[in-house]
Length: 464
Ligand code: BES
Ligand code: MN
Ligand code: MN
Image (tube, rainbow, N blue to C red; front, side):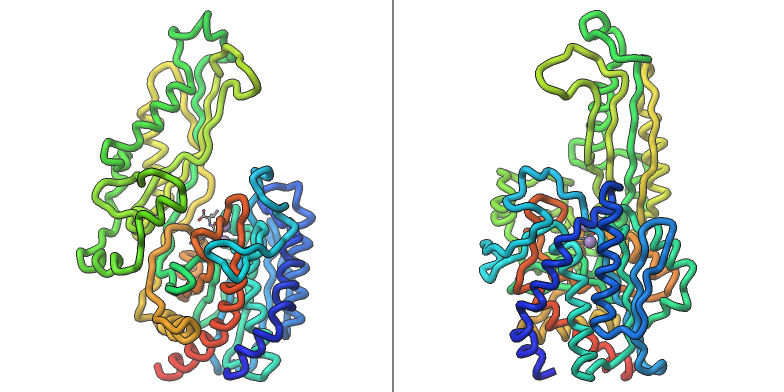
């Protein structure tokens, strides 16, 4: 693939402009006000796959947003790579914190991205990253170098739990048959130190509702004499962690896979600066479970966090009131061997059990998923390592990620194949936050690295 570097240099502006067009479509899956844009985005993805050289491209209808499926079969005896990505994005709010509008992409220079980064919602998560695959595939087709069969499956509900994709995968096992799944929807350590994500955490997401009196009350007439749902909820939530920041739900840690001292020592070799971490977040100290380092707390350990809390009066000025109800949304990040449905039940039972008399508690389960691990002796991991090492000039190292892509564990269960997480984002790219961006360097490096994955995967596959 000698001419790949030149090809990328020559087409840099085309690649950037095509991505910019996709980023203008506000495909926010969580908010039905954008339903039309999500569908328009699916159409744009379909067109891009057709243009890139797929033989067959379909918009597959589901109970929710459609899945864009594309394939190119050059020889059924050759291995097949299934590329997965998502075309939906997170809501852009709070809008006032963006330095430029979220759906008007612009390239700006940052400290981490001296060559510029594209600022837009979805730039890194995941439009910029799945589109690298479309362009890499296009290159291989155009230059007659495609070494295997390829399938694309780009969904529109990742950010809301991939319900329809689960439905689709269960019904299309034959169609989706593959030798490895390739995903760029994670990050790497830095542009100088490439890494491959070898694990994703599981997730359990719940919503709780605490109800006190049958109506909002005057806080002078009733305050101090009835349970205030907000006071109670705050107390209940605070009790979910002990003084060492361990989670207090009985049984929560029972199935957690503990890493050996050797494995932890191996992990600790990945470069990490606590000072740089604190500086980047402008915090004066880190905080978390006793006995574990910051990288461990965000990868191999389970966590529980309130994502939102509300109730009572939050408008302008004051209102002396005891709200009848208080609410919170809570996520738990899980690690291998913890079962998300079991954890959801443990949470529910515990949370109801700690409610004092005078209130009632309701727990509603949202979505969830299991954790996932890629073994580093898998040929897909080995192929990815060779590819990154070649394009970055330094060996890529394995890193367990803190985020979740719940569908990956389901792929393993239903399709019996492993996923290789070749992410090119940086933690500082502000995914899900205002001013999300994706480095121009990272985007182009991805387009350069992916064809090498194809090449090495097929080589290693044939040696098996
Ligand atoms: N791409 C992210 C997941 C991710 C990002 C994993 C960076 C590792 C490193 C994905 O789009 C995402 O945001 N997942 C959600 C879960 C989903 C069910 C809403 C998450 O992790 O919160
Ligand atoms: Mn994503
Ligand atoms: Mn996301």
